[in-house]
Image (cartoon, rainbow, N blue to C red):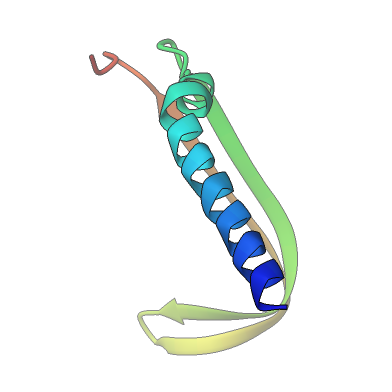
Length: 80
């Protein structure tokens, strides 16, 4: 039992070392490709059963409210 546990831990260690060597050499260059002319818009919509609305008069709960939001991202000059 002790020998099998040692072999399992050794195999996991070898797998972890191989994975650590593989990440910067193979995986990262495949994931790190970001287009230089990025222009995107994110739109979020949904409903909530309760929303805490904070105004100048105080905070109130709004029941069954519709939520929405948007975000624009435009790259003017890409980083080098």
